[in-house]
Amino acid sequence: MRPRWCLEEMGIPYELMRVDITQTDKQEYQKLHPHGKVPVLVDEDITIFESAAICAYLTDKYSDKGLIPAPGTSARAYYYQWLFYAMVTLEPPVEHYIFQVLPDLPERISPLKKRSELSMDDTLAWFTQVSEPLTAALEGQDFLVENQFTTADILTGGVLMWALQLGMLDNHKILKAYAETLREREAFGRANQDFYAKVED
Ligand SMILES: N[C@@H](CCC(=O)N[C@@H](CS)C(=O)NCC(=O)O)C(=O)O
Image (cartoon, rainbow, N blue to C red; front, side, top):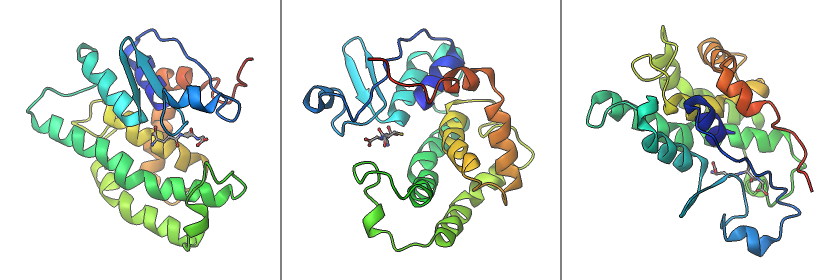
């Protein structure tokens, strides 16, 4: 959803290939994604996995679309800060919580399941702790970097969309308002509209 949201925000045409990773020929698909997961982007001679890397690549390639601040500026520094923060710091407790509320996911999808000793309350406390700088940055702002919408909002917002759906933001007024505002964006709606559609044969 994140790379798709990014493409929709920039108005770049793309072909969406839906993959049922439980049915796909594993060896064939692993030529595209070594872990057999989604998403993966094929752009001419580039085949790239990891959703944040795909978004960063696309935002650079189409920098004229304005989703990335100018190089060497403080805005660019904060942009990078939030990109990495979203993936490395904010996403782990949210992902952990997803695995806890959906305990029946196959182990292939939920590898943390067996080694987790955290209670759900511990995971929520972990989320509260790591989200403090995000809450502080969003106070009085609609977007993370100089109040302009950038790909940092797509990656951070993408993580928060899961948290919103799971009720993790109920005690986080600022984060909830931010996620709800992002959810109203037309590009997000287009990227998300058929998220649960079935893979065609
Ligand atoms: N860090 C990776 C995570 C990739 C990932 O875990 N994808 C999930 C869907 S959100 C997946 O393919 N799960 C199915 C599976 O593991 O079989 C990214 O952001 O691209």
